[in-house]
Length: 252
Ligand SMILES: [Zn+2]
Image (cartoon, helix red, strand yellow):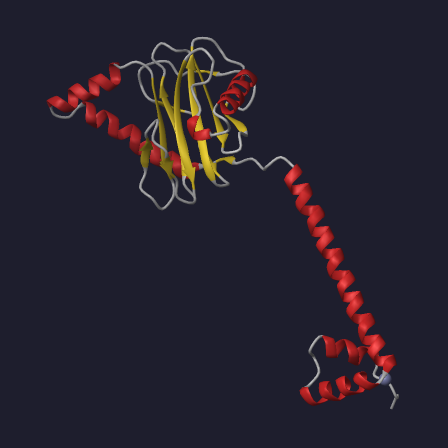
């Protein structure tokens, strides 16, 4: 038997892997043996250097993450919400063919000018419509659909601005605003969106008579965000021609 403890034994002592009696014996030996005490200290130093290295690597990673642009917060979403849209589309004609007041209301809706709607669904909460000007809390997993009636307008575009001023074109994602589906019926932008991240997010739908470049819309949204002192909930209408509807959603 060696006069000193093996490195393996010292490592196991540090890791707490030795049985109590064995640990006590090794500690007693190291307390009176310079060689083993030194070996123990070397193990401790190595551990400290390793921890510091890991910490530095993590710090580097955190700095890189902070410098990188945030991931897309909107994801095109799928079929589930399309089913809920069907319900909306079916309900409207029923309203229009209801009793007298219902007819009047229905006709008003149908003959009315341009309008926009933001519908929330697909999560655990009830399907509902967000009211422009009233921040609407979202539940986890909920998705958003955007609808419009074009009236006399011929082009439509939608974008969002998050709490740090990141602007995301929703529809179209590039180019210029898209031709509308003409007519008085409610139309829905294709697909839907699920918001990720947290905080407030402003959604803007613009109906216009001329196609607006998406870049122009994005720049106008950035300017409005800056003018609002970086308060996405307080942004004024974008300085672009056409008719806008704004909603503010509060992500979970
Ligand atoms: Zn020793």
